Image 1 (spheres, rainbow, N blue to C red):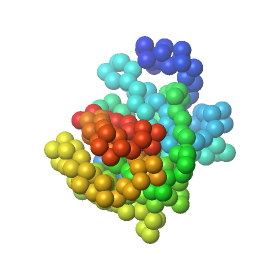
Image 2 (image 1 turned 45 degrees about the vertical axis):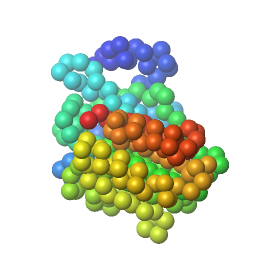
Image 3 (image 1 turned 135 degrees about the vertical axis):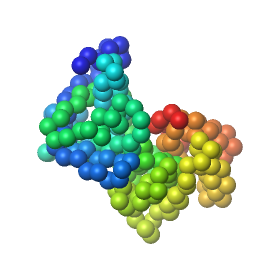
Image 4 (image 1 turned 120 degrees about the vertical axis):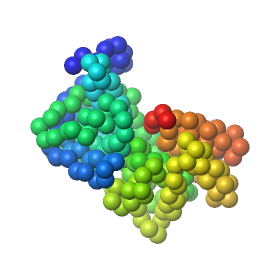
Amino acid sequence: MGHGWEGVVLKLLRGKDFKFTVTRTDEVTEHYRRIHVTDGGMLALTGVHPTMWVRLWFDDAGKPHQRAYTLVDPDPETGTFTLEFALHDGAASEWARKAAPGDTIEATVQGTGFETPDPAPARLFVVADPASLPAVKSLLGALPKTPATIWFETQHATDGDLDRLGLRLDAGLHDVRTVERRTSGGHLVQEVKAALPDLLGDPEDAYVWITCDTTTTRALASYVRKELSVPRHRVHALGYWRS
C-alpha cells in the first residue's frame, strides 16, 4: 500500500518505514484491544525511549490513513512490543478488531522523542482517557518515584477498570480520579478546574500532562498556562483524537 502525500512528506523528514507482524491479540474489553507484534527490526535500529510512538498505516476505502500509537512494553532484545487500541469508529479500529496472528501492518517512525522534565517534578498531574492510556503508562514508568494525580475520563463502564486495562499504579503513590465523559469533555474540564488549583502548589515544581480529545486538551492547556501560570516547558498537551 502506498502512503500518499503524507508518506512523501515523512520520507523527506527522514521517516523510517517498517512492517510489523501480529503474533497475538487480547480482548481486554469490548472497547479495548491489545495487539502483540514483532517489530521488523525497528527497535534494534531506533532504540527505545519513554512514550515512544509510531505511525501506523491503514487502508481507508482505498486511501492511506495514518494514526500514531504508543509502544507498550518494547523489548529490543526480542524485537517485540504491544499496541493498544481504544475501539470506536474508523479505519484504525476496524483493523484492530479484525487483526489476527500473521497479519502485518506498515509503520513509519518519525518525530518521536521524550525529555525527562528538568528539574524533576514534585508531582505529576495527568489528564487522560483510554486513547492515551499507553502513553500514561510509559510516563509513569519513566518517573516511577514521582506521585501523580490522574484524571481518567471514561466513555464506557469497562473503561474505569484501570487494573484490567493495565495501568500500573502504586496505590500509595498515585491518586486516580475516574471522570465520566459528559458534554463532549466539558465535565472533565470542570472537574480538573475545580481540583487542580488546590493541588498544584508551586507551578515550577509540577509537570502537567494532558492527552485527551483535541478540544478538551486545548481548553485545559490554556487554563493551566494562563490562569494557573504553569510554565510552558512544564506542560505537555497533545490532543489524541477529535470528538
